[in-house]
Amino acid sequence: MQSHVCLLSLSLSFFFRRQKEAEKRSIDQAANKRIEELVAKRVEEELERRREEIEAEVLRRVEEAKRVMEAQMLQEIERRKQEQLEEARKREVKVFRAGSFGSGKPVGEGEGEGRFMKQGG
Image 1 (spheres, rainbow, N blue to C red):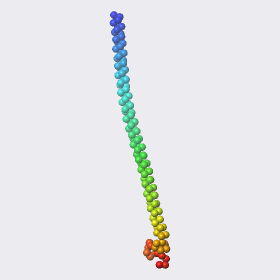
Image 2 (cartoon, helix red, strand yellow):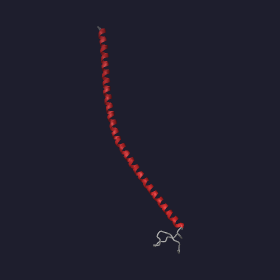
Image 3 (cartoon, rainbow, N blue to C red):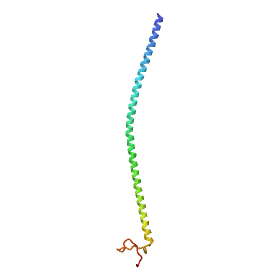
Image 4 (cartoon, rainbow, N blue to C red):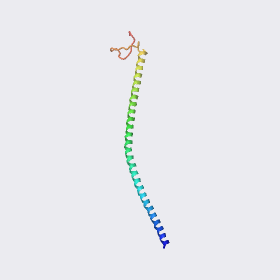
């Protein structure tokens, strides 16, 4: 009988140990599932928060790029305008100095306006 009691005791001990292990696994699985859910929720919240920051940063950079491009365009327009003015001045001086119409002095006062005539003629 003692061997039966001993065997029964071992069997019960083995059974309870297995049951505790199963309960521990079940608790671990439930805890892991809950942790995964919490992590997923936290990641989603963080991504949402970061999404707003990223969108704001993108908008800021786009606006800055627009300002830079606008300034560059205005500088380019001004540069071209100055080049055109300089070219016009050079043509004026060239015509004025050429003397192809006379002494190079403008006639003015209603006498062939805008043309050049030789003095005395």
